[in-house]
Length: 236
Ligand code: SF4
Image 1 (cartoon, rainbow, N blue to C red):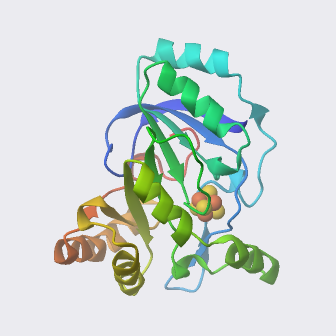
Image 2: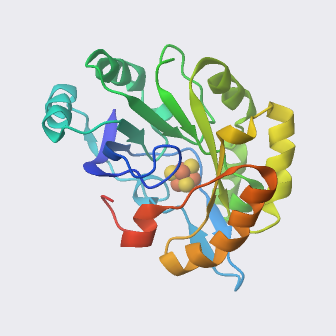
Image 3: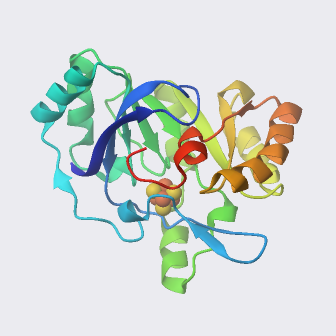
């Protein structure tokens, strides 16, 4: 399992917002998310060092990491990326944390399903059509080819505890979310909407219409605390 960084921070999104957690960020991703802004500039993925320009990283030393988690005295252990489901030994590592008694969250774009880790809390973040603003045909082609999440998300929903988080770029995104909710039968209480942005001001601006969407559709609203406090900074 190739890792870009491990750090202790406060979970900034979703159901376990505000919870001190031990993060393991894998490197490498099968998508190339990019969003168009109102001024026609683009904002790419907030961890490009694991996706657009993936770092080589280092092999996870499971025993060392378990000692570090134990010493940190925090959980959940959050395995994030990049896209962690691409890592060959993910299931084995996750099982080990569970055996050690830790609660594990797996943050995934939900394009890949993995058998045998049913105790893991799945934090799925399927990427909407608004994420298709890649700057080059090559990147767009890769994103389009790999961004098929419906079948694997269905499987995760059948086997694991889960939440489904959607990044909202514009007010138009709600139409696609409602279509997906109907098609995949996602209960409203499992859906979290969060404004897209890599700085606090953008989150504030988009946050007001995301708040209204949540209220109207009985979805959960989630802030992105780490962006609010630290901007787009590594290790937060
Ligand atoms: S799926 Fe996540 S890590 Fe991969 S490019 Fe999109 S935002 Fe970045």
